[in-house]
Image 1 (cartoon, rainbow, N blue to C red):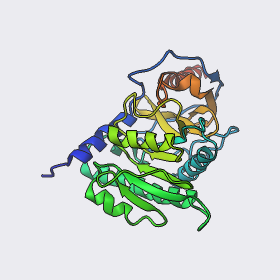
Image 2 (cartoon, rainbow, N blue to C red; image 1 turned 90 degrees about the vertical axis):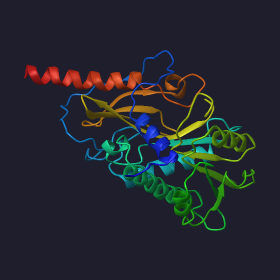
Image 3 (cartoon, rainbow, N blue to C red; image 1 turned 180 degrees about the horizontal axis):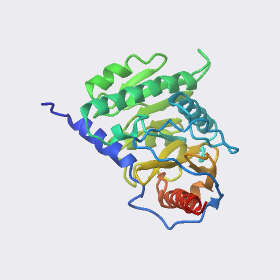
Length: 300
């Protein structure tokens, strides 16, 4: 019998929270820019993030066709946010998406799935480091920051990342340096988020990758959500996505037609005083499109 560590129990709780479609501290819903769609959606028994074929839309926000496509989108958005954050006085940047393509694994609570998610986050971290410091000796220096709660196995995996310094908050607190970018991998404690906020306030571009165990104080509303990908489920299947690829708007897309259902600004979608989107209206747009298609199909 396996005894799962405290770290992995926290990881499992966070992963399960990613699948929740409604924020518990949501603001009043503001009407989005609404579009129409006209194609049928097909059912599927297993939830997968990347099984929707060609996903190009007319707008800037697209449903990624693969993990590689997602990573390209996310790194481009992160670089845009580093160059021009929403608030130049607080270059605090977030990137959030399901680490695993098989969404059913995200909430199963198993140690194996937790390790797979950890591996996926480290793989993405390597790409981020390479993308941010793309020009040897000329690009910004990158410092990876690990939570004081990070496991020894995660520490060993991150030590293999080339082209970056590594700091564990168990040992010391990083200091802001000119020409440096700090990247926090899966922070989980208030100390982690406080350190990230402090670095950003001191002028150091600070990127948070797939942070969890967040509350209202973790990330301020003046931060920049560079990349956000959230599958929206209806009738136990992925029916749509909420995508944010900075500097584009928050965009709700239909999973099958790839059509835009609605768009939101930061002011319209973010929960008050946080950097977290309210998912209620996005979920309703997806539900409405599926229901309308079903009604049309019955009438044909």
